Amino acid sequence: MAAAISGKFLDSCLDAGDVSSIFIYSDCSAVRERKGERLNSDAVVRYSYLPLSTNQRSSSVNGTWEPDGVTFFIIQGLASLGEKKMIVFVLLLLGYIIILGGNSMIIFVVLTDSKLNSPMYFFLSNLSFVDILFTTTTIPKMLLGLLTDVNTISVPGCLLQMHFFVQLAVTGRAILTVMAYDRYVAICNPLRYTAVMTRPVRLLLIAGAWSFAAFCTLPATSMTWQRLYCGPNVVRNGWCDLSSVRRLVCGNTVIDNIVSISFAILALLTTGVLILTSYILIGVSISRMGVAQRLKAFRTCAAHLTVVSISYSSASFVYISYRVGNFSPEVRIIVSVLYSALTPFLNPLIYSLRNEELRESIRRTLSRFRPAAVLPTKNVHTVS
Image (cartoon, rainbow, N blue to C red; front, side, top):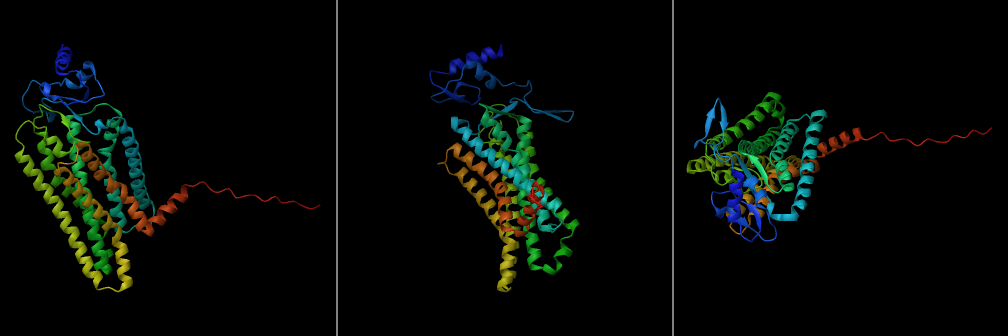
């Protein structure tokens, strides 16, 4: 009965034009049109009929969260690209495979090679682990969306994806800050380096990075679980990010915005200022060294400084693209995808190219998996 009513409703909304995407609202103005394609009303009903609960508020029963109104979201993604989606799919899949392979290789060689037992490689392996988790929260769902006409996700699944995306992004920045402090101790206090960077201290720094990220993330993301989603359910991004989901809230989100911006500024300023302070102190220390020592110190910091520069510059570009009205939604989504995948993609390449010790370890590890070469046999002829 509900499907029949929805079908008649959509037939009355649709004219002779062509439908490219359905944005679910409560009236006919929600139906967007584009020339060249046509979806029948039966296909549309599957995505337009939203199960609604009889309650008007979110409820928590026996510790479980029950959504009210909208029970799923539609991730807009790059649906408007048409046949070009397969090109994006192949490129994104190759990038994801490289991210998984490169970062997994770093983790493996650090765990198995006894020569890579310094704190720097311990922090690098943790950064690689975070990069794998960070990209895995978004890219697989995006790849699935590129293969389907409509990419849906449940409300709890969307909110979980949003939380872990933000949490892991801040964790990556915090680990980069810890690595900057590690470089500061190694260059400015080389004689005390091993005494300062003991294993308990390393574990404490990593635990502090995760705790700091949770502290900066939970207030903003937890508020989204308490909000009501009763109307539009199209997330205008490639995944569930905080700002896109907040636009779908039925109600005033001024407090949510203030909390989100406050903790975002706290996370960015804290990590940015600490990294900048570390490198200012490193620069002062390097200025007092000889030429040979300066080159050695610069080689020690080059890879980390490159990763930090790429990470913060790409984040700045994403922020600018979302504030400039000249960019189309598709361009903004592509920029966001590049931002989320660029640093995890480049980390293994930068560290393996800049760090000879790591490069040699990877070469030794790969050589162990190669099949043993078959030596050619000599024919020995005996003269009778």
